[in-house]
Length: 124
Image (cartoon, one colour):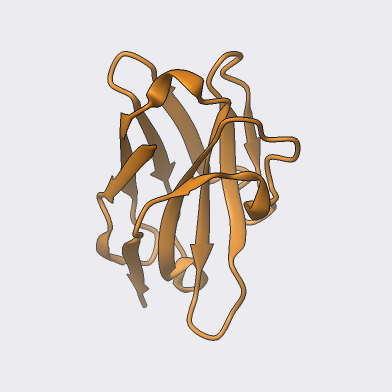
């Protein structure tokens, strides 16, 4: 089992920045990839960004390209999501996910473990 705990969410004004963290514990030696997803009220869960633990190559959803950066710290078993130029439409609960064998980084079903989420609210 892998336990994931997100932190760093909060209230920020339009154009501001936040850094989300996802700390993993437990059986962390069998991880393939980590991802961030988000879900706004009344909407489906949306892929934001993901990264392979071995290769470190990031992959972004359309909403994150050019504004968000995902990074992984193997020593700390932590994945970060740096979010810049935030917009009201970025308001959502952000979830961290881990998978031991992720075929498609943007597909939520490929991930085995999920955190409880952290709320991000962008006010105008």
